[in-house]
Amino acid sequence: MSILPHTLKIAAAAVALAAAVSLSGCNSHAAAPEVPRSALVAHPQNAADMHAEVYSGDVHARYESQLGFRVNGKIKARLVDVGAHVRAGQALAELDPMDLKLQATSAQATLSSARANRDLAQSEYNRYHALLEKHFISQTQIDTQNNTLKAAQAQVAQAEAALAVAQNQTEYTILRADHDGMITTIHAETGQVVAPGQPVATLARDGDLEVEIAVPENRIADYARGMPAVVEAWADAGRHLQGHLREISPEADRMTRTYRVRVTLDAGDTQPKLGQTARVYFADAAGAARQLIPLSALHEKGGAPAVWVVDVKTHQVHLAPVDVAAYREQGVLLAGGVDAQQWIVTAGVHKLRDGEAISPVDPQNRPVAL
Image (cartoon, rainbow, N blue to C red):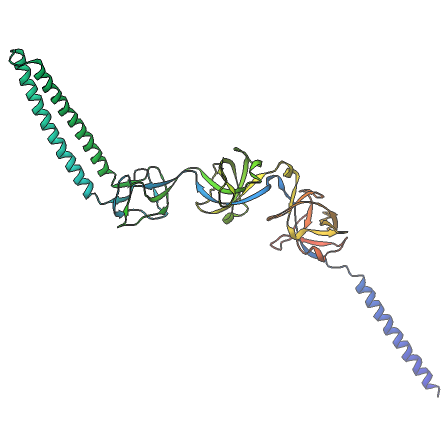
């Protein structure tokens, strides 16, 4: 009977020991340091180069020429293709010259006839002048011959001019580039009959490049010739090219009610290609002190916008209220709250808590030394 109480005592002691071990394990687990969460961090970008207004446009050459023949005729050959780079004087297309050659031959024959008439009139005048010296004819008759000679000489001059025109027109059967540049469009093909001045090819001259944009009529008063601008090609995002506003159309487009504006790119090593899409940013003096952050970095604190700022010493994050100036395609413009020297969390901001330590990484998941 005495064995049972002793056994119960041993069992109770074992249970107590197990509970103590279990509690000891829990306490050691709770005391283990928490592994910092990886978080993308970055500096706010200085918005001195950002702009109040952004417009999309196309890249053009400053000078674009619609080239056409100066005479009518049937195109015999087209000598270049779209995208070809040509030199000044290079042949682009050729008309069938047969008709114009026949006109030149006819003009040459007319000139020969006029010269023969002039020579005959000159001979008659000389003969009458000799008779006048011998008093065999009157002054009236010599005056008549003199007028006939002058008329014949005028006919020769007229025929010579007509021949020169005909010969020039023969040369006009070859369409040549008037400047170095790129052929951007072909408007006519071999076998097509064209009229004088009808566009056959479009030539974009080498030299200055421009971006043509459309500005709404309620904003056009904010812009003036010479204003600085920054151009960013859509195909080369992130590379900013300097430019300036060169031309503002004096009249709004009747369909879109926008004004055509041309922004010239300043000379540089990297230039966009013709026809590419580009964004044009116009400088805003008030935006010089603003910061640009990704939209994903924006959080809230008490219903107001805020961002997570990283302490460079402890790597802990704290919410800092910010003043949003504007929302842009590239991100959020801040009028205050952070500066370009601070580190902020740019992604996953909804998963953080105040005072939490993080492991800062860049977009390539590489550790960042703050």
